[in-house]
Image (cartoon, rainbow over all chains, first blue to last red; front, top):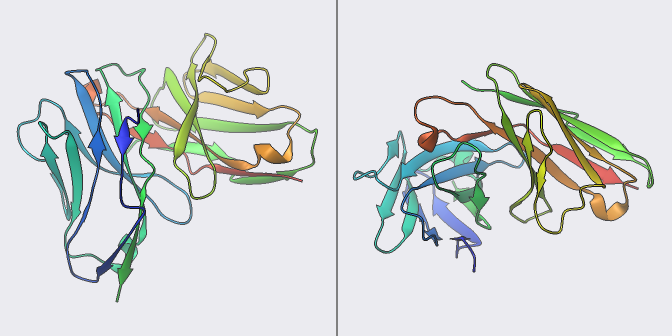
Length: 116
Length: 119
């Protein structure tokens, strides 16, 4: 079974509008972390936002917020006031457990295109 | 912030040759680094976990004799693709975690990746 599921291969959003990128996850661990990364066409992976399994409040970082619904095992990324520079691939990822030696498992990604 | 430097950023080599990719943590020590591979329009797939001073741990299906990993210091891990073939052409990207605050919320910091083309 896939650990991270991103069901939207591609999304379009009008500039200045908000957009939600979906992510669901599967784990039996009680302690885990959820991450979102942005990958522009140049290839680098840019860390956007983190949500811990024990965090009671949704994480926010500037225009990025994470809609964390633990019971549904979803961790959707919300980008507000979209900008043309937001056009990129977006990956949801999970780390199970609490060890620094645990890698991230990535979803298949969503390609976001911001339209002027 | 934590910076991971990866070199080279792109390389073209002939089939049968070997290619070495370096991954350095510039401003932090990384006892563990992770190597991922990304085929076009696909996700990042973990290849191996590189541990300083010990053998790397490879994911199922990844040939350890083909993808040699050396993590000789706390700031450097190398991936050598031996006897490269066209099917090895891919985007290879390394990552490491800086121990800031609690480990649980430390993101992986990625190098800029290496685009390998084997002709």
